[in-house]
Image 1 (cartoon, rainbow, N blue to C red):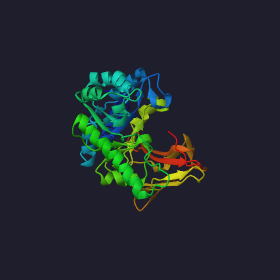
Image 2: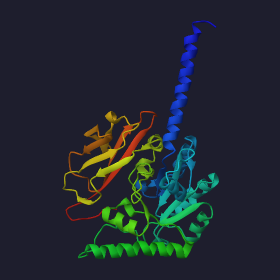
Image 3: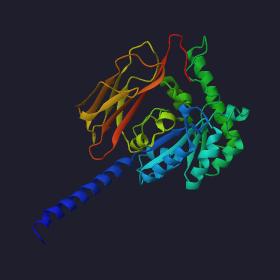
Length: 363
């Protein structure tokens, strides 16, 4: 063998070994988490902010397959996460909120074709009264026969954190508990026994609502972005919104490949705020393993905001704060940091709800 070829061959084998090791490490990191996608309408004629065109939805499904994801039922992935049982490969769950009939007409045929399970969170009052473009109970039953899970999205789809005039904490809890319980009872009357899975209307929650759901035995899902692992809060499990401005397949690919921080603690707690207040400071404490913490960056409203990251007592501490007041309505901090051993980014999201001076809620 020519001596001039030896270094080239050695380099080639080293490169192949390195790429193989990187691929294996990337697979292992993803085997201890799940990505959950959230959709609403699958239509071109419904509100753009909560809709994805049927053709674009198919592109999402093709991307999921291309990236090598195993699409599993929501109850199965939760059991893996709760018991800290690794998945065999990258794993994903698909969810829809509100039970619109475009899910039945446009999304269901594509999911059934692929034999992919999915979950639809519905508000039974809308189904009973056939509000607008809501699916029927017969359509929901048909989907359940083909791998769907139909779950609780509250009975009336109210802003659950909004208080009625003169209502105290105990009265609020009683009213909201009744609403959630009525929804679960109606689901079971129409479709049979089911797990206590709950999606917050509008993605809105605070510590009091989380505690109420925990006491009632629910696992609850929100709308802030991020994946799920054993360190996630089971009363506010994140999902990546994938409709409207979030339907772009390029940005979705990054999110699908994202990793979950092993969160030890964070502050502040979730609460309703005023849009006149200075934006809160987020402190995220995580296990630092595999994280290029020096490159951590947080964002608000899509813009980078001041971020500091350091290691203390074997813990990664990320601190960030938007220099201004919170936007009225729902907003969030997103924090990311690159992985040391893969091409993925760790991702954490903190949602906020801010009311105007009239304490008005925004849909």
